[in-house]
Length: 245
Image (cartoon, rainbow, N blue to C red; front, side, top):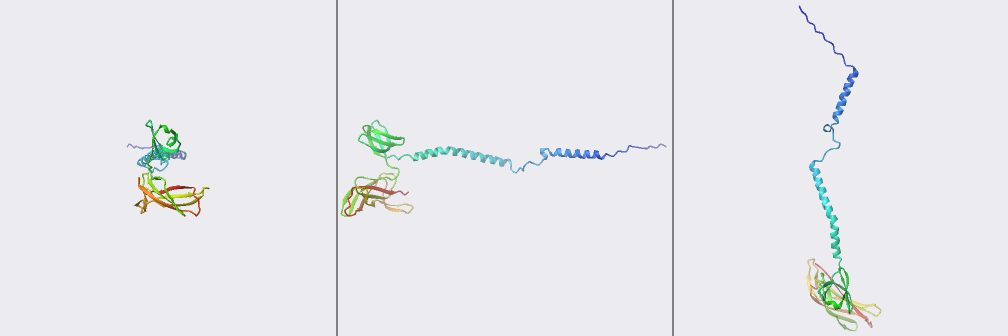
């Protein structure tokens, strides 16, 4: 009889110190894994998508375009305001050589004319001037057509005449004012009267029968009551009107 027997070497227990080392190695390996980007938590929460960022870029581009336009616009606005401040042209002077000068005559003598233009004042020799004419105003421009007729009574100075609207707008409530002055430049008396014009009813409801359309004439009569024994040295007159559209 043959008998077999197995004998093996019994495994030795791992020292406690070695077990601690293994645990520490496993902990370290876990810590190393957590350092990888794909497994770590984001530094800040990603709430915006690529589409959101693209929208923000488009909005920023639109703001930049608007900002560039605003930078360029002040030069245009300045040019427009400068044009609006140019003096109104009232006279047109034709020179003998064919040159046409537009401006406003500010002074005139027997030999020369000083005219204010858009580029400054010019002094013209009358011998070189062929013709001078008025330029129609872009607004209403009511002027006297001649000297008034004067009648003097005991207590009244009565003035009558005509005016004309030489502008391009209708003048409403055209009123003529006369002032009487003494020798010491003291005002003795004054009064006014509306012209005999056309009747116009505006969309706003304003109704007037003292309006003058462009090119129309209107008659006036102004009675100025004067104190007894007053001595009138000179008179001044003026025209007031309103514009409604």
